[in-house]
Length: 366
Image (cartoon, rainbow, N blue to C red; front, side):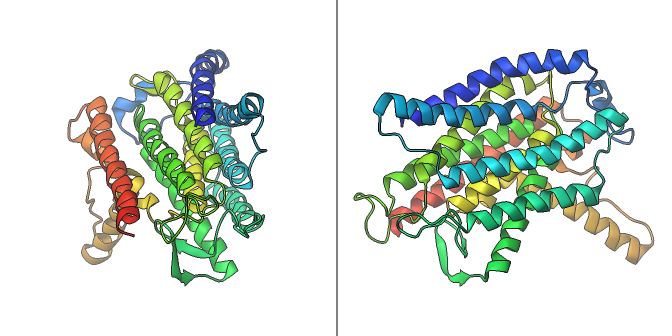
């Protein structure tokens, strides 16, 4: 437990300090955000705000994790090396961040609001996700448990939903693509995606601690209620480091934002969310825990779908919302940006509470 808190604290301090330095460094080189000309006019004042801030919390999370491992070894002498599950989540986190970094860098270098072409961006995400999925199905421990399983899971593996290997890889790929693009869509207002992601990773810290205390690999975890998760304690350290790093970043990213996470941050966070869901056997529960990302993504799908249907049937495309993603719809209704952010945080907080309630209720009644 101490190593979990230590990792989170190190990540938070590193991000608090590192982000301040990054703001100055990025601003001195003109590495600022480009804003779409067809976007909200109120957002034009954000043009030039330093971006690629996700780089800071990616580095802080990785350093925090390995610091926690070293701290455990030095203080208890019983610490173990990095686990396969933790390394794979960090690989996915950093790999998706690298794709986002390329996207952000191209935007800055070419002074435009569009970075990587959609096919190149999708190819990069797919490559990282497939490598993660294939590796996650390897590395059995002494009990035969692998980081990922061939079953679709809700709170545990669903016994009758075992998938062939290639379908498992495709399923994990879809989950990663959905969550990374979901966080990317939410990231449009100061602090919105940072605060929402922080809540979900905080929830995963609690879930992993609970799974470790009730693990089938320990003497305490026996019977039908124990959890078959390969490395729950190490995953708790990763989740705590992510939570701490986002706490530190939010200090600078809250309205008015001094720095943006960019695609570097949003794609990496979405990848980490999907990775945590796969490793903890909560692949469907993450849709509840990250409910805000699902709602905002659905608003874009509905907007595009409604426009195409009305254009085909009536000859003129109509919009279901004034603007998508959903947060911009409320801005166009006259809501202040900070009000949209706080109210969306409340929605995300409720999703986390509901998700944790479902998780605990399953254990009580299971």
